[in-house]
Amino acid sequence: MFTRPGHIFIYTLLSTVTLAGVGGCRKDVETFRRYSPTLEAIRQVLQQVPDPSSKTTFSLSFVKEDKVLVTQNGVRIFLTDTDNLFADANGSPVPCSTCQNLKLEVSEALDKGDIIALGTPTISTSGELMESGGIVRIVASCDGKPLQLLPNRKLKIQIPANNPTDKMKVFTGLVTNDNFLGWENTGQPVYQAEWLSDNMDLVQGYELLTPLLDWVSAGIVLNEPSTTFCVALPDNFNPENTTVYLVVKNTRSAVFFEYNTSERAFCYYSAPIGYSVKIVTVSQTPDGRFWLGNKDTEIGTDATVSIAPEQLSELQLLDFLKSL
Image 1: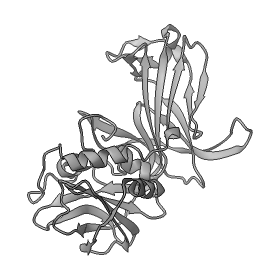
Image 2: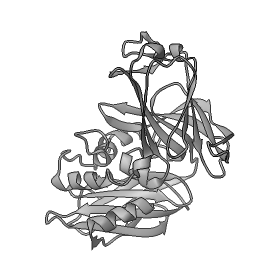
Image 3: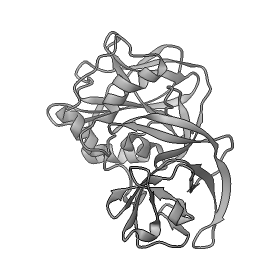
Image 4: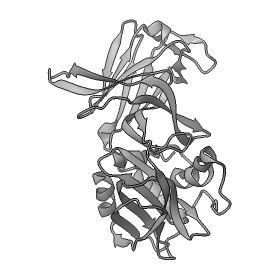
């Protein structure tokens, strides 16, 4: 995704992959080349959206005992039975006690701006819109060599959350060739949990047991009637210089639109009817100027809304995206 070199995820995922999970490619959706100077500029802006505190790197040596790793945002990762937790890329066990440098890189997407910036839209691999309770990515390595969990092990993660809800499941991110394809339901329940912070404050949140590393989310599918929802922009805003997002209000849900050539509009095909949403468009025209479209609306049946983006500075654009 955006965090991986060489890919413009917003563009590629929704024009080539997401629809494959909901019934195959649409004939009226055009796929454009991956590399556009203006889309690359948007990608660079998006990379600045997550707060530096959302990325934490832990470096440990010759770990022989159980450990709890805590990020700056309070996400907790439990390393237990550490000599029987990880395997190398070939599936051979790698005891943590043998690693001179056991490294865990943790990225967090705890709000909608981060979801957009990291290219992890809340959509299942079957095309269903989801609500997320928090997204974490864990990349582990031993002396520079990548690690995975052993097949019979699960990693416990706790994610702080205000007013955690029930019925959420553990979803893992499906990634192929560095493209994020969506969230896959493991069927494993997510638990509500309470714990004490280092300052002895009571923290509420979610507890996940994930069978896989990389992208992990507490999530629930929004089983609501859905419809096609499109955004029409002036002709000078097109898939070569524009990305479009749908952000669901009062829910940690954000998805990306694709361009429909016959409609001459950006569309999302599983928009939840009756939901209040914010439509966001981000553009950079060939003259280097940034443009933002921002409209609050409600999803109706097979609707198309028109938006006229306004010019703003890169800093203003960045501030807006951080506020989502």
